[in-house]
Structures are given as structure tokens and as C-alpha cells.
Amino acid sequence: MLSIMATKKAVKTLTQKEIWFQQLVATIPGIDLKGDNNPYTSLNGHMFSYLPKKKP
Image 1 (cartoon, rainbow, N blue to C red):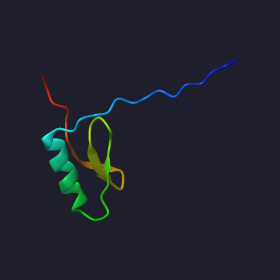
Image 2: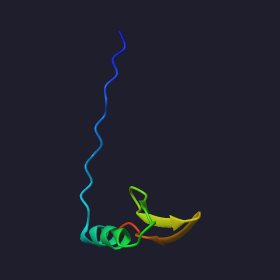
Image 3: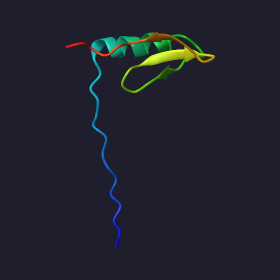
Image 4: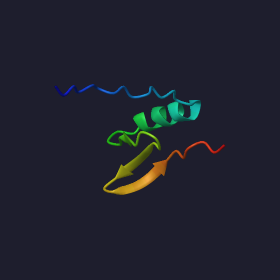
């Protein structure tokens, strides 16, 4: 018998910069925050802002 188990995703803890970026994007109507690992915004297929990963 085949058993299918759901895998759990790791819960990501947001940095203060990521929280501020989300709050800023939320103030602009019609713009959605995209990207799970590297948050960014785009409009009509053009990426116009992003928050790069923290460098070690």
C-alpha cells in the first residue's frame, strides 16, 4: 500500500528589513509583493524593486 505523507515547510523568520519592505509595498495600491526567498515587486512584467539576500 502506497502512503502519501505531506511534508512540512520550514517556517521562515522575517528580518526587520523584510518587514519594512512588506509594509512599504503594502502602501502602494495595485502592487503585490512576490518571491518567497528574494522578495520583489513587478508591474507589467518589469521587476522594479527587490530585497537581496543577506550576505554573510
